[in-house]
Image 1: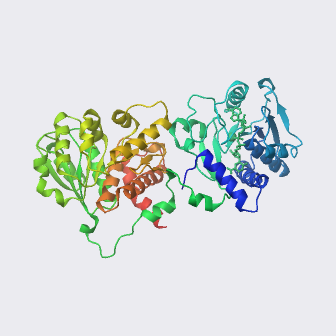
Image 2: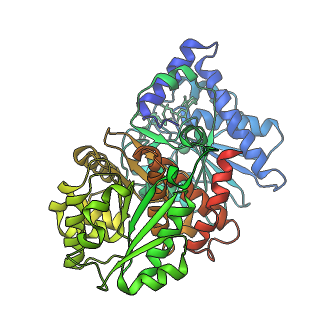
Image 3: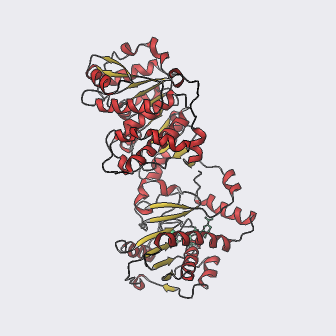
Length: 503
Ligand SMILES: NC(=O)C1=CN([C@@H]2O[C@H](COP(=O)(O)OP(=O)(O)OC[C@H]3O[C@@H](n4cnc5c(N)ncnc54)[C@H](OP(=O)(O)O)[C@@H]3O)[C@@H](O)[C@H]2O)[C@H](O)CC1
Ligand SMILES: [K+]
């Protein structure tokens, strides 16, 4: 699913009006009707009144139409025009059709709204072109002050957020729900805005599909159609060699759990064969905890500078992919081992956790990486690798530029994990939940990605499919209890996540 900028959304709007028998007033009617329907479906039977705040532009116009449609259906509705600036023509036309419309001229006129109800925020949408200040900012603060008593539902965007620029630190509505039209907006996917958007609901309003098909965008949200295109069903004549041989380098004294979790995920993702390379202290743990994996060891409790000996150059061609990092530690000897490994190996690779921490301690190693590896930092690891940024739009830009410059796939973990590709495109992943913020969750993702690469998925396909599977399995695990779920539960639900693709 493409993510469009505010400018592209305006173009989609204009294209639809030019190529369909629909004018802008009717398009507003369509959008508002979809919102009114959602509000009725969600709040029917609650007897909650609707308090609708309308701005001067077309977002306010949507609010006016919503007010009329809800009132026509017999709901208890009050609507206010927050009057500043010249209204748009479609806004003006709809003002005349809401006889109960009142006007707020200054913050002192903010209404009492005694009965707990639903505040509809239709102040500003994708037309917001500068931060809110002065008395509009004061109205925003007053609405936010009502959060305990009323649900706040924002139309298209929480007022105060710009669709594709940072508004960090500026006044913004804190919505419980955001009903956004037709396309996801970049701002709704970035963590700095998570507290404002609440739960985002995508509301189709019938914009012309030809525009969407043709428009070029760097940003995408993974959807089921994409996942079904990537997923390859198994060949009935397959044998274990068909699905590749992965090498996982993981674990150290006290951190063998990371290696075990990651190893299980490699196999559950579908790899044919797995060898796990662990320090000697982990041999029995690995063989006992996960007999499906082969295990090779070295003497030390961490990886030694002689890592290339057990790994052995002559054996390198046996492997289809190497996953490295979970629980390895960042001892200088382990860094040396990674350096040697990079001298031996130029195939597919996943680098996570301590492998990334080693890269940030010794950045020259970044240049030794084979092209098109997958790097999976969480925000702190990302910052250690590439530096801090002022806001999450800047961080996204840094992610994109580093993926292009280094010719690597870089996955930045978050609610909507962002996956940057060397060609400049970025895919956001919609699956996952806060229950996955639990120890070992990242080790499982490393295993899944390694397992998919082993099977011959290209890095971009493995990245998009693997991240989706990880989040989906997490969602299935969290369905029982997000608090009680642990990383092993994600592995336990991978089969069901695959089953969702096949439905
Ligand atoms: N996507 C679609 O196809 C459809 C979208 N709809 C709705 O339309 C809005 C976008 O409407 P638009 O009129 O372009 O913009 P807004 O309503 O969001 O805001 C414009 C008005 O706000 C003023 N403005 C902008 N920034 C500020 C600010 N910081 N402080 C105060 N006022 C501000 C602006 O005034 P100017 O002074 O800049 O001229 C405008 O008055 C979209 O979000 C949807 O809700 C359609 O209804 C259906 C199709
Ligand atoms: K809004």
